[in-house]
Image (tube, rainbow over all chains, first blue to last red; front, side, top):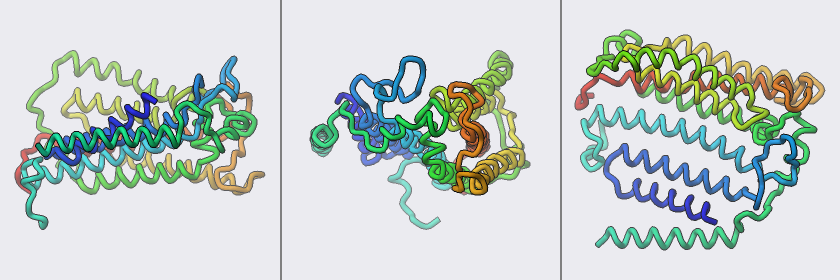
Length: 112
Length: 238
């Protein structure tokens, strides 16, 4: 339960950063926080009480494991998130080069 | 005033969603559907001990090919947005702060070990937590360390492109080879499964994850190179 709360707090902080902050880098950090929160949420939905990691080794049987599907999907999500962050960072570099600022309030003209 | 309203709305939202989640998906309860099938059959069907790896590469191998494609598209997008020729990059790298001797030499000593650790993570992807994506990211973090420690650091983009392309081709060819074997499906596991627990086991999972690791490592290195090549430049003009 604490994991649900933590995940949603992370998502809320990220959403807050995206909505309120004026600095593009902080907005990207907000994006990353949301992604982390969603990943934590997906993994914690798959948790089974007193479960172990879904890896077979000595003394671990299938009945003791947590759900592996959310973890596999989270792996996908992390990679997609990393590439998305890289792309966002590239856009920020371009915007900074063009406007000379990271403040979104000063990026008024829509045409370059 | 507006701030406090925003805060309270957020707080109310969090509490509401937590309550909804607790009702809809009770925490810690066994909610497995297809997951139980994977847990029961992974070792028998794929020979891998790590169920997550088996799902990513065996049951959802096609999905992972799409994921790698997304990563490739993002890396290409970064390159397109921040395009500079190799000559421009060399000219532009303008170190205002020279890192000190210990950092420069230390990073070169540590780098092989970082790569070795990354390879270890990749090769043991079907046995322990880890795999191609994680190991590739570790290798790329080693490259990032070199970039941070040596301002003149420069990776040849052509070599990266070739490695990346070959790794992607390996993935697709391994998948296509499955079409002509007993499984008759894309990415069918046609190599012997071996003894679960050994490095050389689990059929095509190991070569697939090595391909993914090389691809992820070279793509992230390319992204790092693109972002670092923007250094030593003043903002303000297009």
